[in-house]
Image 1 (cartoon, rainbow, N blue to C red):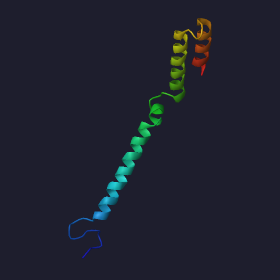
Image 2 (tube, one colour):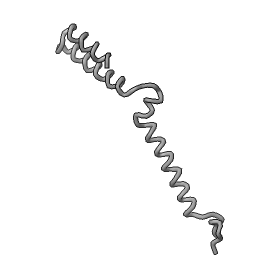
Image 3 (cartoon, rainbow, N blue to C red):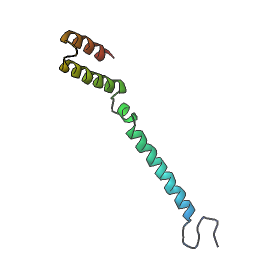
Image 4 (cartoon, rainbow, N blue to C red):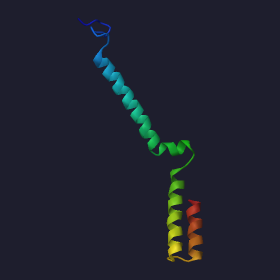
Length: 84
């Protein structure tokens, strides 16, 4: 029947192979998730706050372009955003 080494009449253990495949799928999935999340930004030296500042500056530029704020207020807020 089955030997002690995990081999059966087919030459390999299907359950053992399934567990190894599942383990590798989980490891690769974890790596992909970490890369897709914000962790890759830290590896590249890009911080989350920098991205938020960029978005805030884009919104400020839109408000200035629409005429909601004047140039003085734009410059003041731009300086505040860049400090963060």
